[in-house]
Length: 273
Ligand SMILES: Nc1ncnc2c1ncn2[C@@H]1O[C@H](COP(=O)(O)OP(=O)(O)OP(=O)(O)O)[C@@H](O)[C@H]1O
Image 1 (cartoon, helix red, strand yellow):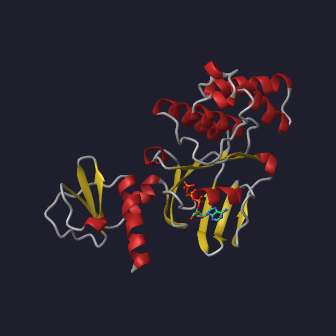
Image 2: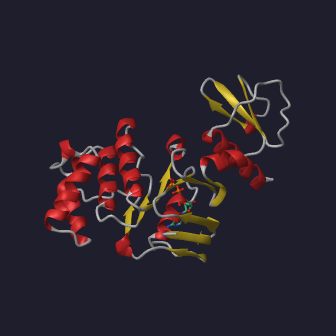
Image 3: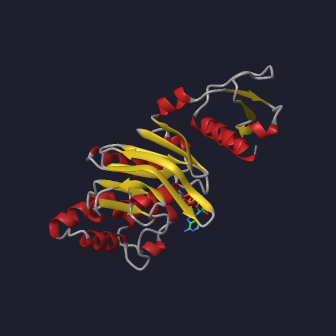
């Protein structure tokens, strides 16, 4: 195991950002951290890079030189060009000469940034800037790659570039832990960790998560219990935790979005009960 968190709890004053969270990040795999705003995703990622120290529990990770980190912030220097940004971080990690040039140019191609290679980072679109930040995080072939929402603001076509880069880093042997709010892309990861309110709602492969989901989801034009329903396309889905729908509506096979919403609703109902 390249990195591991065990029973990690983090508090900021009275607020518990993470509550008893355990995650394994194996070499060669992509683990996707999923959850809404404030779920605790950034806090968990920051414990792996030593930027947040847990109040209890343990985090094991490689040394700083072996970690590549794309934070939730800009991730690059606005006053440097794409090439200069990559050269700068490459230099910090001891890359130089032909090796650095080769790695830099490969990442520029892999990220689809060839047309913008000599443009200042401040003049890039938000999506291009995320891709540059991801390329910078992986330039030194770290054994642990931590990416905080690399695809937020990236258009669907560029997200394909980004996913190729991330998959290649994993195929190269890196352990990858990334957060995302896009559930369709999380379904592609080897492992999923679904967080809500600092707690893990479910984790494992997408198949494990589906197999572990209990209850029934129905689809109808209007739900009978609005607090247990959400919009999907032209219909509303409704969750029946006990598996016994009280309506004559068709049941649906839940996808990750349905599962995450249903589990989050259950947790919130329990929290307010
Ligand atoms: N430095 C901090 N001081 C105080 N509270 C914090 C701090 N960092 C995070 N929090 C709180 O901890 C909780 C988890 O935040 P975190 O940023 O980890 O969530 P997130 O899942 O990454 O959400 P987002 O996608 O909105 O960033 C939130 O309630 C947040 O307000």
